[in-house]
Length: 96
Image (cartoon, rainbow, N blue to C red; front, side, top):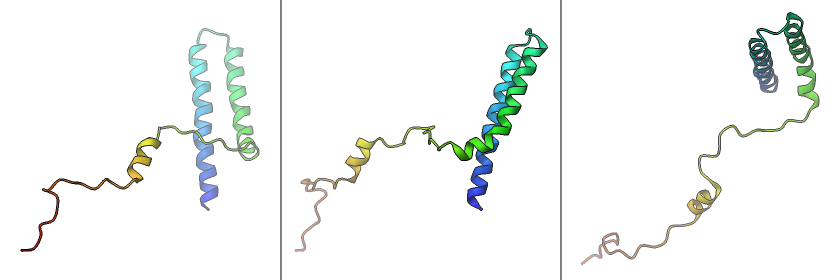
């Protein structure tokens, strides 16, 4: 079920991008001919029909939207053990 849900959610946001791009393009082409704007919507509609098949056939390419919170160098440094402290204030007290 989760595979179908993930596929459906991916189709929803991809379809929203296609429709949003078509809308934005036709807004920019406001003074253009109606036939040119109609062609944009026709191509968007065709893309919506092809999108489910293309999503199944074309291999997925993961895209990192946000960079990693911790760079690799800092993560490697954090994995190393901390050096032993020689400060007497941190040393445990000896029993008398």
